[in-house]
Image (cartoon, rainbow, N blue to C red; front, side):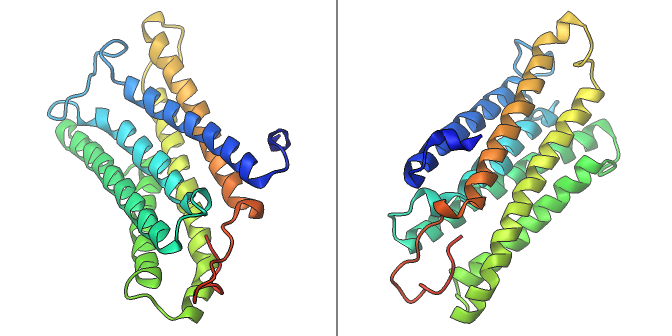
Length: 241
């Protein structure tokens, strides 16, 4: 399906990246509308309804920011590699901070409503994603930024680093989509109740745009034509992400 963008790798990457950004931004907008007062009586309120922040923070952090963070080496090929490394690490910190805020929101919501924690597949995969994210970030920072391990170790670790980056992203997407399904099943969004029609449509299209964004990100990561060329530095033997 992606053949339509042409044979020039730079041009096709730019087109697909723009499409992905549009889908990602639409996902964020729809997640933000989920608890808007125009479509829901449960509006944004940290004190009484902290859960309202959970979908939005997870969508911005673990979907949009993380997806863009793992594409930075391919998006900014002309920028010096060290700068891209720093941007990559900072984007991931932002992603993790928002994801942690989203996790805190659902934990606070469970405490307020006196419900048990981590009782569903969604919650298990979500907490596993956060844990893997933290571990991956620490390993990457130590290996490639500071104190920066030897060339042989960095070269050997890079394929594992790339693999787990994709796994964490897909785990984030799975967590978001399973949470979407659970939230829908415990509400009346998928009935013929006209009162809930707006939210029902928001949830359906949110799932569609989230899936499209994730598919494009994984495709861009998996296509070797879009990979950043090796820099003419002492790191030229280390594969680029």
